[in-house]
Length: 274
Image 1 (cartoon, rainbow, N blue to C red):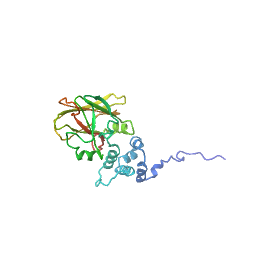
Image 2: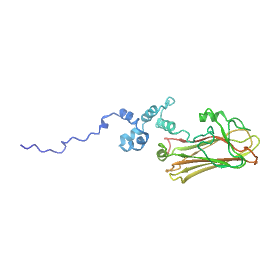
Image 3: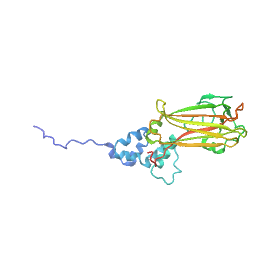
Image 4: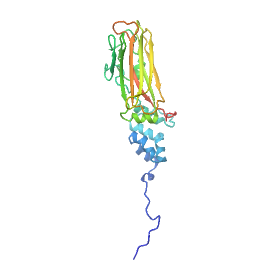
């Protein structure tokens, strides 16, 4: 006896198991995924999953999972927790040994003119480093470098291919915040030069920003700060190069003083850089 022929529609359709889960449960699951998967792969699943990645609830959970306090967020708006997560997780200072506490560790001395670089535990011939600088750094101790009567130059290269920095630079184009504290002496003027270069994976220059600062004689510290934005894709390294000297050609170290070198990424998801 032959069996009855099968007709179309009698086979069981493949069930997408995730459809059976409600949104809150799915968001909790997604909040535990690695960031790279969350921002590059999950949005490609479908419109529903792409919507999850945009939700404040997901990024609030990411903050809590990462131990990031959300107590100061009183009135969250779209992307509030996303900005908080990215800036707390990836907004740290990228410069190592930013305030001379390890002398010249992590830096390359490119020029050591005159009597050369030196590290001062407290600035000679100038005011103490301001309390505001300590607040910015979070460091209990800040020392400073001081230069001589010919150019003293040092540099440091930041590798953005470590961790998720490279993909974040291409996807979100965060502002690069640059700052450094400068000072001269009460009895001698000085000069300071800063060059920030954005490099591709072969370390060719994509963009660069240069500042030449004349520092008159005096005891007061000054913060030099500026942002770098809209630099395009492909940035894989950042090179910080800076130098200083005095203006009177005095033997010893009467040139520019500097400390607290900061390169920090600032993410904003409420502007066109998303």
